[in-house]
Every structure is written in C-alpha cells, then in structure tokens.
Length: 298
Length: 299
View 1 (cartoon, rainbow over the protein chains, first blue to last red):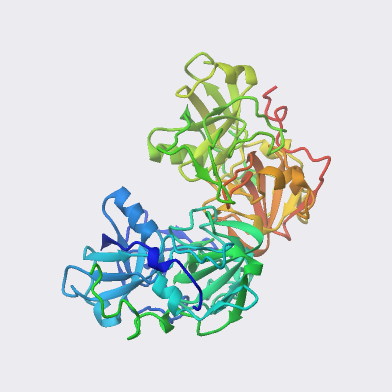
View 2 (cartoon, rainbow over the protein chains, first blue to last red):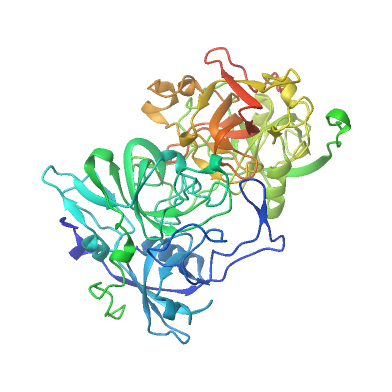
C-alpha cells in the first residue's frame, strides 16, 4: 500500500505459545439455527486442508479455524499474545517434527490463528511450541488521522494494493462488502481479540438465514458497513471497518465466518475498490514476503 | 404450580439462592468509550439505589445500570443455573441482613458471567448490602405458557407474567404485543450469538448527548426508552442463541440502561420470539406501559 506510516518506529517483540487443543464438555452437543444438535470440529488444534484463498464455508465444521490455533498457558501472558499478535506476523514451530518451519498469522479468534503450508501443517499437533514475532500494534498512518489501524503487520500493509489517493482518501481493495445486519457474536468486544462473526453465511441451511455471504474465502479482505472498531466493536452509521476473514463455517447460531479488524474510520476516509483478488493468499507465503526467509526473533 | 394450556406439562418451581453482587473492577479504573475516551463505569452491577422501572434508560451517568439488586452466586455453575432458570416476575425474598424478609421480584437477567436483576421497594434496597442472601422462587423456563400461538416461544417469563403485559392472542392469527419501539436487527449488539435463556441483548443506542433521548433519525420510540419497556427487534430469532433470521421478531423487556462501551447499550431480556406470521408488534411511542413496579407488586 502506497501510504506513509510509522512502521520504522514499531517494536518487535518475541512471544511464545503452543498449539492449543480443541475443548469439549461431557454434554457434547450444541444447537444450530433450527435447533439441530451438532458436534462438529473446527476450533482449536491443528486444522488441516483449509488455507488462505480457500472457501470459508461449505465444511462440516463449527467455528472453523484454518491452521494452528495458538494460546499461551499463562492467562496474563495469553492476553498479551492475543492482543499483541498481528495479522501477517511470522510464527515458527519450535518443537516436534516440523520444528523450524515458519507460517503466518491470519487473525485472532480467542486463539491466534496461524496458516502453515499443508506439508508443514500435517506434521504439527496439539502442544507443539511456537514463537511469534509480534509487530504491528501502534501502527499509524499520519496522512489519515481519522483511520485507526490495528492487528496489522506493517509488512502486510506494505503488500496490500491501494494507498493514499490524490483526494486524500485511503484506497483499500476489498473482496466483499458486508452489511451491518450480518454482524453477530463479537459485537461489543474489544477489537484486538477474537473476531466479528458474520451471520448470513450458513451454507446449506435455510434461505431465511442467508445474507448472501456464502462465497467468502479465508483470507478475504472485507469492508463491514456501519462498523466502528477503533476502540472496540460497535454499530455506527457512516463508519467502516476493514477486516480479514480469519475463520470459517459455523453451525452455532448468531456466529459465522469472521473478520479480524485491520482498519476502522469514517466511511469518507476510505476509497473502496472491489477486487476479488484482495486476499491474504495473494501476499502471504510468497517469495517476496519479508518474513519468508527470515528467522523470527533475529 | 401452573398447568399448561390443553393439559400441558406443569411448571416446576425451584428455590435458588442468590447473593447480592458487589461490583468488581480490575486494577485500572477506566474503560474506553466508543470515541476512545476513558470513563469510570459506575453502577455496572451490584446494588443501585434510586433507579426504578419507568426511568429513562439514560437518566443516570452510569454503565449498564439496572434498577435494584443484581444477584449472583459464588460458584460459576450455580450462577449460570440461577441466571438460566430465574424468570421475570419470579418472587424473591431477602434471607439475611437488615432487610431480611423483604419481598421483591425478578426484573430480568444479564449475560456473560450472568446476573439476575431483582427489584425491591426503595426502602428495602436502602437496608440491603452486597453479600445479603436472597432466595428466588425460579419458575417458567421451558414451560409452555397458555394463550400463546403455535410457533411462538416464550422464555425468561414467569407463569402469569404475560397476563400483566400488553400481550394479546385472540386464539387465531398472530399474537400482538404492544411495545415502545420496533428496532432493526443491525442495532442488536452485545448478546448476539449468545443464548437468550441466560443473556440479555444490548441495543446499540449510544449514551450521552447523542443517546436515546436525542431524537435523531432512529425508529420511533428509540429515543424514549424507559426501563421496563417492551421493545421488538425485527430479523432476530432468539430460540437457539440470538441471530439473524428474515421474517422473525423478538420481544424483550428493557432491564438496564445505556453504556458508553461500543457495541453496548440499553439491554433487553427476551421474552417472546417467533415468525411474523405468529408474532407481531405494535409500537405505542407515547402510551406504552411494559413491565412496571405495580405489575410486579413492588409498590
């Protein structure tokens, strides 16, 4: 993105975590939109076969977290990990047969969600230790003072198309536009943690549930209408939030594929460009990704 | 004990213990409002004096202020159970402390960790303190209320509650509910995606100078919500978690006031949810009377 930022002033901090197990209870089932009982995988653990660029929906899954779901064992350290880790940050596997392999953060969802190449992912399991090079919180765009940036690695910002336009607006390419009525669980929570579940994307369920969002892909950059995520997550007409779809298919009602927040500000501070290619897959994992050949922490 | 319509199942009553909550804060006093300004949350839970059913939701400079005493339980699982099974209108009685013997009623409930909001006479609230034990005669959750059309689910309503509210069903066609305002689902904030049997739903009507009393271009009645009002939300199905569904309606009771937090606001405890063919709302912006102290015999 062609925009002036304070990236050179940001601190890089080394954090640790581990691939966290999926969690259940002895009652097993939860209820879907029509009351259907379900027990479906998706949250926690090392989820295989779904990566940036793949469809977000269409799986027999609930709260699908593509790739590795990472937490820290200490509650306070975990919140630091969740708050400070940004989309695009490099994550290195430290234990197990995949030790040394590097992946990238695609979002937060009460876990840090990390995408690894499939051959790496196949060797990772619950309990494997990881190192995160956290950088991005505090990122600011001096030429766009009304826009708050968060959860965004400066290297990701640099790779995104768009930037400052002659009229002063920030051009952002988005793969989809999300209506305000799609915003589900996550409303009212802080915007540096978890994500905003989008309703209306229950692939395979009733037409009366659909808001036409079944085509979302993991990694899509989206614009959520009337959403102000500068200091939390709330409905505010005339504001806009840019996010990245970091989780997928849900069966739990009021939940769905969710964007992690990247930017938020008044609608007229942005110039949106509809671009089906606006997806992390276009920028992460490439040979030119700044972290691709770099050891985290060095 | 109350029988369901047409020989349905009887409602069970269970006495459950609640404890008057003490407010709790972290080691910083501030929360951050929607504009990024710090504020100190006053009145968020616990025992609040001088705020009553019928007061405007933004009458006091607080955060999620509920009228009366919030009840919790020190064991999280027991707390969830208390919140799940307590229904609006259920009787409550103070067991310990200076107000022992005082009688009140459940007004509503709040989500996340869970709180039951109970109303008492102001003179009784003055004598209560956090830690006082209160017994709640919980009854009504999951019960099939009489005179409710097929397709409409009742929740969080004690037996007999609907008789005290502007709810009518002539035996055919949709049930009609009188409300203060009918709001679109994009105003549904914190609580969306959560189980309505144990959570409230915050309406994203901001506090402060642009708050519900400001009367800007929002739906009629949204600017004048009172504690205890019934409010309808369109496009919202609250049967299995609260979520978006076209052609549905959910009606709730306003049980706490505004909040400066983004995504938060006056909260409703849902009591009715159903398809528009079976449940309809009529807004009466000026004359509406919902849940009142007299209806709960708190006067």
